[in-house]
Amino acid sequence: MDVGIQGRLDDFIRRKGLRRTGQREKIIKSAFSKDEHFTAEELFDRVRKSSSDISRATVYRTLGLLVEAELLREIDLGDNQTTYDPNFLDKPSHNHLVCIDCGRVVEFEDAHIDLLNDCVTRRLGFKPLRQTLKIEANCEQLRLNGRCPNLIAARLSGKRLRKKR
Image 1: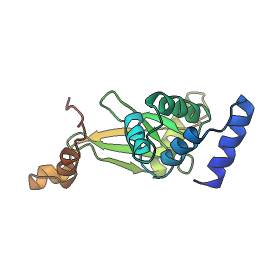
Image 2: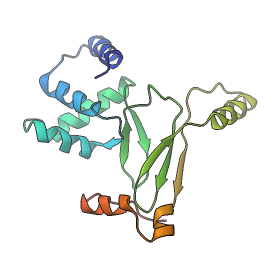
Image 3: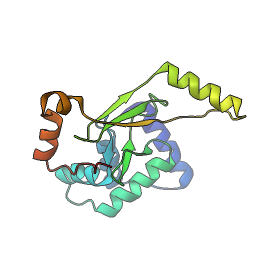
Image 4: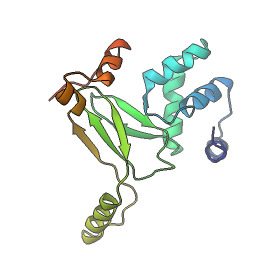
């Protein structure tokens, strides 16, 4: 885990009067082990592979602490599930492109979007702090080729796909 994240977490735990536990440490290590979005259930499955003594409730409580400590951000990528973003500290204004066919999520940054958000918020009398943008799109590979490796992989892994609107 990044030293900066660990330091911020230690400060937060100290301020809240909490203690560091082995279970919490395993969950946190797993949450920041990859630079990918995840749901609480996906994190629970990841943690259970390495440690069977961690409950679902402990995972949810730890996620709540990480969000409160502003180390994770809750984002809505669709399908009525809360998704957690562990890399927004490095890229505070990154955006998400979500394929409604295969569920693939692509992060992107664009200076034009940042400039537009800055102009709009200032014109309306606000100071921008952060911004997010979610674009839902159809899979080009599926449209052009009739098949999509991401969709096949999602189905093979048992991933629940988003419902088309």
